[in-house]
Length: 199
Image 1 (cartoon, one colour):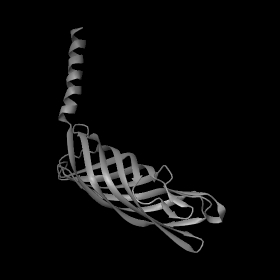
Image 2 (tube, helix red, strand yellow; image 1 turned 90 degrees about the vertical axis):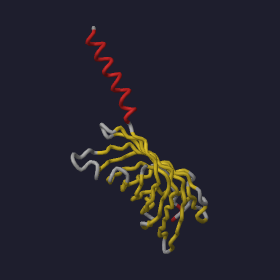
Image 3 (cartoon, one colour; image 1 turned 120 degrees about the horizontal axis):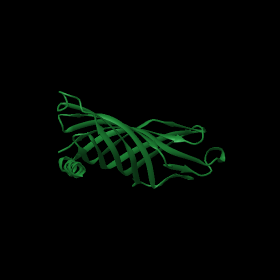
Image 4 (cartoon, helix red, strand yellow; image 1 turned 90 degrees about the horizontal axis):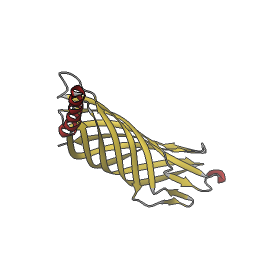
């Protein structure tokens, strides 16, 4: 019975000690993205277009295991351009975006204080701040959700440089009676490269 009590006390102390040793950091995050609209119909051909992003990131990490999460509040510009028949249509979209990632920092012996690789994945929620109407019959959706898959490195325990691929899960754009009278919708697919400095 005493062994069980002793084991229970050790487990409880470990549970209490992990949050106490956890690190919470915050700092600015800046970068660029390359976006393409993925249409449900092949009648439209979309180009890759460059945009930018900037905002604030917070990170919570449990040092012993390297697991944690980060959350950001970002201003994002995602441009799009597609060919419909012989005519190009351009669409400049601005969002407030909140990406939330589960993050695993991979501890590397000896050089861990200098460079630490990490993997990250999680959802992203974007709220349109620019106009919805692109042109007659084509509208941007006011909300866009995606799932991100990312990787990167942390340098000198403060600077994080990362890249992620966002897989759009909801419609970002909708065209009613578009090309050849077919209803068309487009989902975002984008690469984002950012640098964050955490204090």
